[in-house]
Amino acid sequence: MKNILLVFFGGGFGSILRYIIGKYLNNSQTGIPYGTFAANILGSLLIGIILGMAAKNNALTQNHTLLLATGFCGGFTTFSAFAYENHVFLKSGDFTSFALYTIASFIIGFLAVFFGMYLVK
Image (cartoon, rainbow, N blue to C red; front, side, top):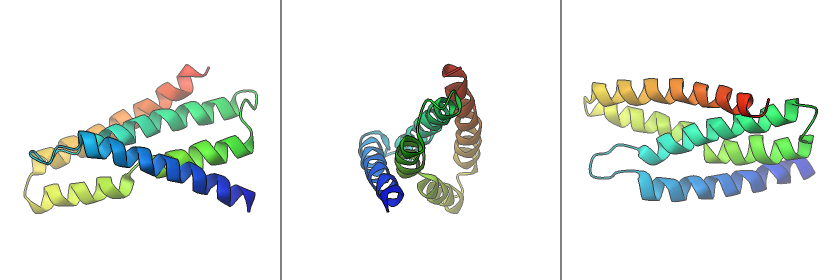
C-alpha cells in the first residue's frame, strides 16, 4: 500500500505541474503545444537524473524512485497528450508540424534522458 501511495502522490504533483506548464506555454493561437513538448523533455531529463542517481551507488532508495520516477515523472510527462496533439496535426493536414513535433520530441527526449544520466556520473 505504501508503494501505491508514493506513486499516487508523486503522480499528483507531476500532473499539477504539467497542467500549469501547459496552461502557460501551449499556444492556442498557433496550436503548437510548447507546454507538452517542454514537459516531455524536462520529464525525460528528470527521469534520466533520477534513475542515474538510483543506479549510482544506490544513491536513491526504491521509495524515492517510486515517488520521483514512477510517480512524478509518470504524471508529469504527457505521452497521451502528445499522441492526441499529433492526431490533431494529422487530422488538419498539418504534416510538417506533425513530423517536426514528433521527431523533435523523440530525439530531444532521448538525448535528455542520456544527458540526465551523464550529469549524475
